[in-house]
Amino acid sequence: MRSSVTSGSDPETGTDAYERPSPGGRRRGGSHRPPRGGKLPGRRLRDRRGVRIVLIILVVFLAWFSWSMGHALTKPGGGTVSERVAEWARDHYLGPLVTLGEWISYKAPKVGGKPSFSLAGPGAGAAAQKTARQKVHKILPGFGVPAQLTSPAGTPLRGEGQWRILYRVNHVPAIYGTYLRPDAVHTAYVAGIVSMNPHLLRFQMHPGTEDPGAGNWRSAADIPAGARTGLAATFNSGFKIAQSGGGFYLNGTYRGALVPGVASMVYYRGGGLAIGVWGHGAHMHMTHDVVGVRQNLHLVVENGKVPAAVDQNVQSNWGATLGGGYYVWRSGIGVTRDGRLVFVYGPALDVRTLAELLKRAGSVSAMELDINPDWTNYMYYKPGYRPANPTPVAMLPDQVQPPARYYSLANRDFTAVFAR
Image 1 (cartoon, helix red, strand yellow):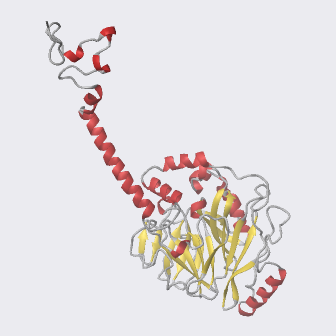
Image 2 (cartoon, one colour; image 1 turned 30 degrees about the vertical axis):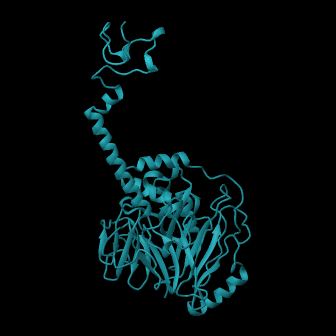
Image 3 (cartoon, rainbow, N blue to C red; image 1 turned 90 degrees about the horizontal axis):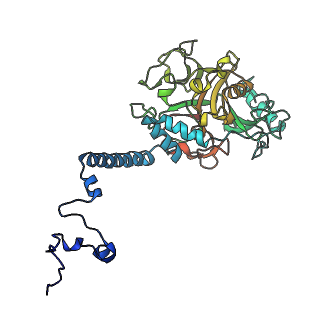
């Protein structure tokens, strides 16, 4: 009697016992084992040299990406998560991908409607303006409260176009602010407009940790504790320097070259600020009194007029916008004939609307600054009972950046305004 075979070779068939078919054609144990010396397909794939190289590259890439993105999200400089991710992508040649993402998420501003907040505020109204005008006129004849602005949207809402006092120097009004709806179509949106008196204020340019980045700037990338006494306002600067069409200069150090013909903010040793075209005019040249120059694109108001160029090649000439939309957050700064500095910013603005608002506020020369919600802001400061650490207030309550943005390191350069 022949004993059953449970392992080893089958003497009759010469096959391994575990390969012997069971009744019904199924192999014993319900599983399949490969021939002796064979390899499973997955194992053969993993053993291929090309696959191993690809896996190594993938692991290295993921490790680098995790480190790089983690560094971008956690390094000093502030900003929202979306801002930091977008900056990282643009710095790594992924700008088109950012633009695609913005295009997908972009929503055109709605038509009609009413603002979400009141356009009237403390200090608005004829009585307050008359009192402020009398105070300023005693010190600076002819330099009182700016003229009330008419609304581009038609019949004004309560408080619209009326100036209110945002900041005083020695009890004299130095910064005024008001609100305007930008046009008769996008009536639910509001632009903030600020008028600053250069006789009572001084302007300082501050570098950003990323733009212009490290350098011998001899200026902080924030407004640190101990340096806030007399702080009146802060506002955003222009595009990233590499996309501004010009350069950056501060305290003897350059980032890029200053380009003739480019719109420029010029900061002076005494705290003055001029707006114009670099290389044109008495105040637009390098002298020993110039401590800073920030260039960005071209003028949007020139000799009191809005040039036709604001309507031409908007994406390439005036900056890539969210989803390619023309109506986005924008900011700009101008100077009036009597020397006031005017800052305008808000949502649902195309380049022409921004320029027309700057002109409406009296600007004879004006330039666009930065655009899109993460990079446009204006804060004024209330000394209250803590003049060494004044309370920041956002001019527009719906701006993305928090009021205390510049109390910590900023990744982009900005302007700080102090009382003289």
